[in-house]
Image (cartoon, rainbow over the protein chains, first blue to last red):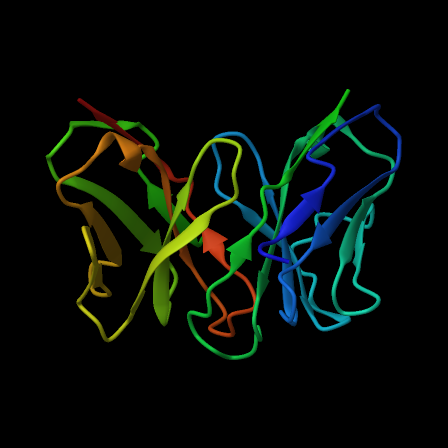
Length: 117
Length: 113
């Protein structure tokens, strides 16, 4: 596609529910990143995929958060037993290789605004 | 602890003036630093990258400096325009592997007529 797309654009859920957030990266990009951005803050790294595998998941806050990328393109971020503190904008980004290539540009999607009531 | 600090207060300047935004970091030794622009309701958009061995980088009306001794980067927009109004984020890669970015909190720039 022309850019990174994310769906849904907005998601309202109740505390304790399960949510899935989807990211479609730029076609051909092997690296995919998830970030979380709270109001007034910069994006915070969650997880990075190189192809189908999670190369770095050190930013996931706890085991309620999980992400997959089964075919090396679309990725889904899954949040179980949502809490009010999970409310934020979840951003996805992709880059061409993600390998040790200092400064490779990451292209961000518009984000999914998650509100947990 | 590791920190990236940007002015949390909004910067208000008049059209035509030069805007200067600051990014300070502590306890990092980044190989490069990036600047992004973010508009409300949108994801960040990459603007410029500067490497540790570069003192200055320019792109059209944008200029970035990088002082690894002071651990500071300055981002300048010359001849600013109302369309430059946005939040500007600095980011660095703490691992040097391009696997993730650590962002500052961003500074909101408002350019008025």
